[in-house]
Length: 132
Image (cartoon, rainbow, N blue to C red):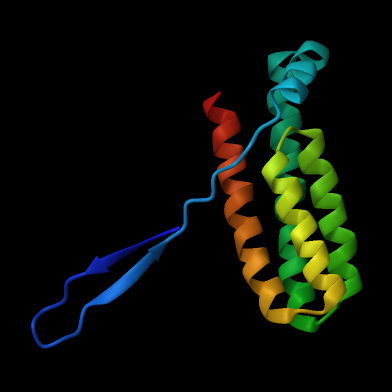
């Protein structure tokens, strides 16, 4: 995350814009095993399917967060973490564990921030995989 000052016209004060840069780790060994077992096309399909499922679970967690269903978030964050691990998205698994911890503790503010980070990490992880 970086903060860059933004210059405004003289009548207004200078403000800051926050830009998040979530680096992601991909497990090359898992990816290699997937490619050996499934082939390149099969690996791409598995990643695409996993991405769709993760997005569905993320949407469910956002909704559950609004209703305060912490056990539901715990269950879905575990599923997201396991799926992320299975398709080589290590950072995603770690952030899903953080979501799990926030939900278990009932820390709503931290949960909201961590869910937002999970969303960014999901997108960055998939982009990183497609670039390989």
